Length: 132
Image (cartoon, rainbow, N blue to C red; front, side, top):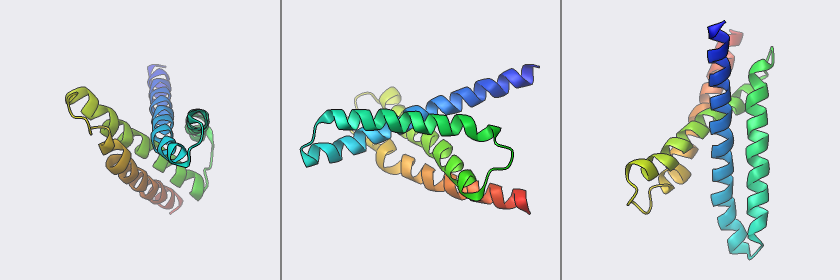
């Protein structure tokens, strides 16, 4: 029984981290595009809330599927690994070097996109090994 609670807590933590990472990533990069286009900042806020909620919903529901397809496994791996890598790169410099004014850019431009690509490759490899 304790194994189920640990799995549930892990699933909850991964869903939360991935949803928050999608929210922040969409808000900051989408917000820059919205600002450059001269549109209302509310558009970026609403779009980031939607992206975070949809990402969290996908990550929460994916492990319960019995036979995920190739695309679903790739997207799941990309979202989870990219979300965790983005969170480490975005919030890590804020926590460990609060005086660094460009710290969160590490998550936006380096660890987030690299984690997304690595997670997509990992999801594809996982699906192919599971099939074979």
